[in-house]
Picture 1 (cartoon, rainbow, N blue to C red):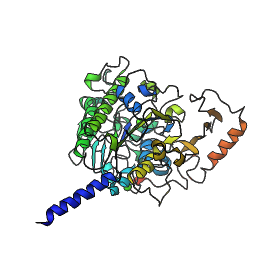
Picture 2 (cartoon, rainbow, N blue to C red):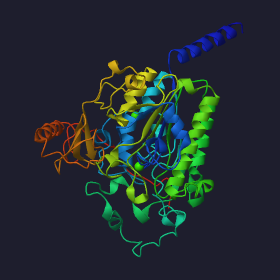
Picture 3 (cartoon, rainbow, N blue to C red):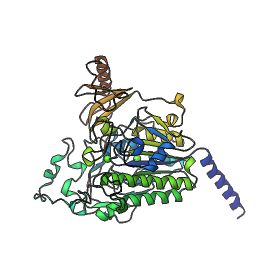
Length: 483
Ligand SMILES: [Ca+2]
Ligand SMILES: [Ca+2]
């Protein structure tokens, strides 16, 4: 028995050391389909005071790139690689897909876990809904959330319409063969990416190994609040050890389901009401960190998974285009990094950054290892965030892929759209309005040559290319909740 106190002291010392040697907590908040100017620190007209304060106390990243749509964006974020390298599909994943992010890929959670991190994913995963593909198979200790988009359920459950609109009538050919439902599918993707349209099973809320809940309209309204409460509880429960919390909200993807108290609050639209609820959520999380005195030892990133969809009322001002495109409005996302005492307050960087950079950045901050047995495209942003600009190795070129196709390339301020040969100076013209290709023919040639460098790596079009790694695959995928 006399050994016990000594052991406890040793354990306490070891624990104290792990904190002191710099294992900050990391919270990565990823909003779905949030437009560049949907929030007030990026010029949005609807007030988002908690995000204003976050930006005031942190750094805005104004040239931060995601991908045009959900699944590829999340694949890049989790693995530090271009989406085509790790999740070669033409569009996004649907329910009961036979494919997903390969379990052999190494996620941020798998990089941080060996460094002593507790890991949790709360929200929308969208990298495969089969057990082999879920967060708990990719380094996360726990998962709570809808594994894909909130519009991928039955129309009778309210998944295809906003709460202020009647549920649209089912098409007459509801019993039509699966192929008809796939008519809108990208030509490159077959049935293996899952069930579309009226073939989609009920939306599932997964909570560890409990039987999944069916999410109907009433549950959609509660989703953001529940994710937030789970996140705050998680922070409280893990305040004494380093944690990585990935919080990908289903908000603000169509259909727009703010909590009832937020409906009508913006005076603009349900989409903007939901943006205001997201701001409330951020306030709850940052307040919890402040209250627990964890703010000086927690890095929080706020971002979006792709540009805002203009047809759903998102605002990407001053950028051109929206979700689904490789115009800046489709891929450049509003991003804030917050770590009081470490990241300078009210700072801004216009350096090219991307979701691929979070894995190397978090690894650097946590003392973790970036995988060395495979190609990683992301760069370590920690010197940029922490104000050590001389140590920062900037990215020279960024490649804009949509599905399998390389559509544009950027170096410095210059961006070339490959098909149309439009050339823009993004520093002076982020809205891509003034095509300089005639005046700057040499730049066009230079950027076209940079695009060619991808030929022997990820390829310029088509699924096959030397640098593309295999998808994860299961034989008999099943819906999480049977229809
Ligand atoms: Ca999205
Ligand atoms: Ca893995």
